[in-house]
Length: 370
Ligand SMILES: Cc1cc2nc3c(=O)[nH]c(=O)nc-3n(C[C@H](O)[C@H](O)[C@H](O)COP(=O)(O)OP(=O)(O)OC[C@H]3O[C@@H](n4cnc5c(N)ncnc54)[C@H](O)[C@@H]3O)c2cc1C
Image 1 (cartoon, rainbow, N blue to C red):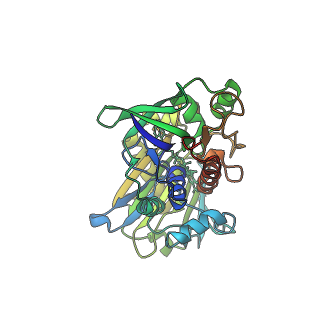
Image 2 (tube, rainbow, N blue to C red):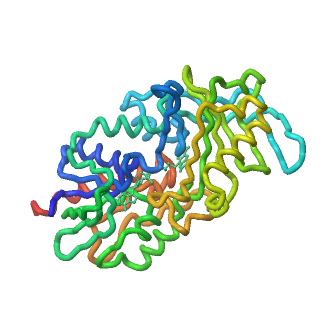
Image 3 (cartoon, rainbow, N blue to C red):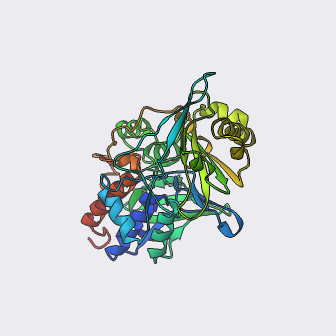
């Protein structure tokens, strides 16, 4: 069995940021276990065009707000990443039922929503590049966390189907609380009150799906349109400009139809319906995308569970990060975004929760040395 002082489960923003903080504090004795083949979790940017000429487009998070999220802003700056404001100039479109499409003055967000030119995946790429540990392991699905004695065991299966097992002193859960309780077996079990609190914490955006259409030009801007639209007719409920400065033109939308219906339609039909909606709103040119993408997060087992099929009501309250009694006390901490007190569910929340978890673990020091 392999050993590490700290095991991090999850290689999204929270897990990678926790790893980078550990390394900054001189702690390299950790392992990060990520289930998917790629790092990033809910951060997912896709490239379009030959040699990615059109650029990177987000199928997960798109925006951050530097003035109200200074910790995340500092990280973006430290990593040397550029940012730009969401395009909002021009009119927006609104369609309701069978009524004619209305054109009206668009919303201007204040403070502005900011984006990264390389998509949010640029954040993940830059963080990953900083890390020197040889134990950032993608394709490692954790199934079980045990504590047979003084040491904890983290067990799972890798991408080749081989079992793995790590012994650790501390565990950082860098995945959503609900996913942790529903997909990881804890032996001994977590205290029932904590497990039910984690289970009741909705995973932000897990019930949702996004569609992106990439175009040769942002033709809607020439007609004085911002690319923003609201629709009661669907399939997309909310549409925005997803173009990149000096690179590809694109529109994206959040699907407004429920996850269960999306599952019965399938991705090809969803793409066809979304494209037809863009033609209805923005004209015939919208029917000729150079690339199209759909990502249904509700169908992704490393984000959503059956309890996430229905859209929730905004950001919930952060649950407790760990037990206050029993054998797990001081041995594990939740650091996924949903555990953030200030920004639960947001990118900024992943940063806040990871920093809090790492601070706690470092304050405890290594157990073996005790
Ligand atoms: C469509 C969409 C739009 C969004 N828009 C915004 C936005 O504009 N602004 C914003 O601030 N936030 C937004 N969010 C939320 C944002 O993406 C999250 O807050 C953030 O990415 C969470 O990071 P995390 O590391 O806490 O969790 P995650 O990114 O969910 O990472 C958890 C990781 O754990 C891994 N994992 C799961 N199970 C296991 C297992 N058994 N073993 C090993 N690894 C496992 C997963 O594969 C994943 O990589 C959006 C989310 C979505 C889906």
